[in-house]
Length: 308
Image (cartoon, rainbow, N blue to C red; front, side, top):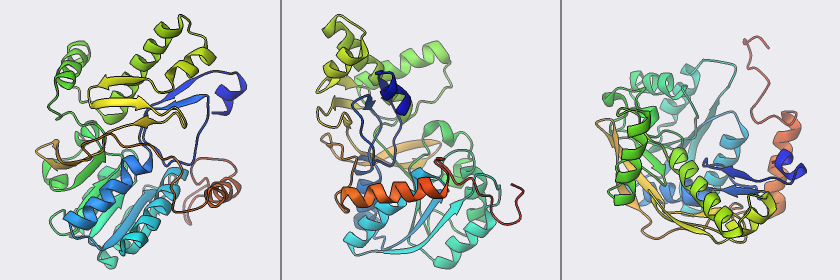
């Protein structure tokens, strides 16, 4: 963001994130917390009867802020945070975190872990008796491509919250998948960030056509309020915060696929700054992490016993 602002450019950002950001130089096509995490938590509270939640994340700005947002919502719902733990980027160890999960006896795990560490984490949870039939997990960073790294038995019965899934039965999605696999191979899987990058490119192209110029400042202005019928459904760029109105979906994992069990039906307005705290409080949380971690996006301090 500082780079595109300094050079008066435009960034199309297609990944779900923790919020607490807004820039006239960035168009956010990924989800804000109220378009992914919070609806999933509310669904779990009602449909899974979850009252005790374990927050399991990566020691990063994303997970730390996401967990703060989730904590506020758990409290508002009358639930309880049974525990919270973070995997460290410098350590492959997951057993200690799994012990914390098992000992806390939660009803539901809310997982913000990003990347391949989800695989040993999941397998260690299963070995400890933490299984989807007893304690389901809702993933916020695992989609169809990541499922290729698991066996069906390891994750069947868990859930994933996104705006887009491959399984959506829409003509626009069938055409999108057909074109993608025709170019990149029939066995390739598509993800929510890939769909968000795709429709972001189309929105940008339409803004260029409308202005007759690829100048960043002109395109930024033309993108505000612009709409597109994306594979996952109609999207629109909010003219005030430049995030995207999107449909929210929750899917259940089975047979290597994610089948939608709930959706918001209508597009949800993006809210990059949750209303549970004042803007100054959110800024203070960001500043504290930046000070502790020297401006890095994840914790640079290795845990005890891990070489620095």
